[in-house]
Image (cartoon, rainbow, N blue to C red):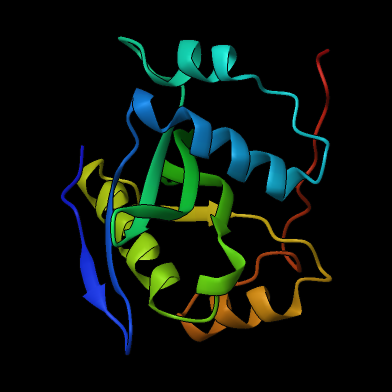
Length: 157
């Protein structure tokens, strides 16, 4: 998978890369921060599902001065009408790096992964109350499908 990306903001230089097994502690930390105590995946489950011969998902990381400061958790799926898509299930940037270049570098990494895998769309969902996040997505050209589609979940367990 993908190339890495980098950019420099006023005070920080950011780079991105795909996650490795050695990043598991950060992945668990970020997932728990996003899920606010609802995260059920253990490091063992993540290792089994992500760092294996046929991974079920992938994670792009953004770093600053060799410190991981954010991640995008994604997987490829297939739309009957458009073919392959990249579904971002979680995106997280450490609070002190929000509103800057970190999210752009992470977005570029995910975009590269989508292009390299012939995905026609990158799709994700955000909570309606996330006004700042939703404003960011509109600014970069994303289309809000909530008027056209409802996203549903049916739990198996």
